[in-house]
Amino acid sequence: GLYKKALALKEFSESGEFANVVQLLVRTGNILKKYDGQGYSRSLLVDKHEIGLEKAFSAMEGRFLEDYAAERYLDCFKLLEQLEEPLDSFFENVMVMIDDAAIRENRLGLLAQIRNLGEQLFVAGQIVIQ
Image 1 (tube, rainbow, N blue to C red):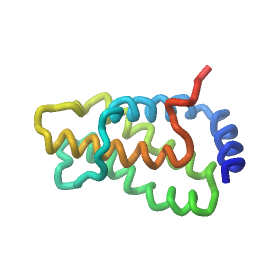
Image 2: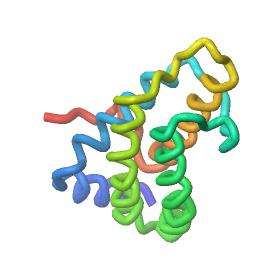
Image 3: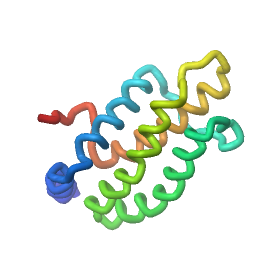
């Protein structure tokens, strides 16, 4: 498993999207440093950008888990790529740390789900982009 992950990481690191995906996952991790909650509720998603991110995440999550279980790690990395645009849009347009605690916790919960999926492959904060 670990060797296959390393090979997939090496191959993915040679793609043009690698640095962007890593940077977005690092940003996600930074927002979540003091957050340990889990999960989110679709009913509390109010902004079109967070709804778009959740739709993109939901669309790829099942396939990611199947590919991960089958040790198709490069396919998992490619699935993470699908989150690049919706995550970028989310960060550009959505304020996460707002006064409304329920919406704030829900946004953090969605980001935590994405981080947790990515961390099955690698910890973005430990990747050095040169």
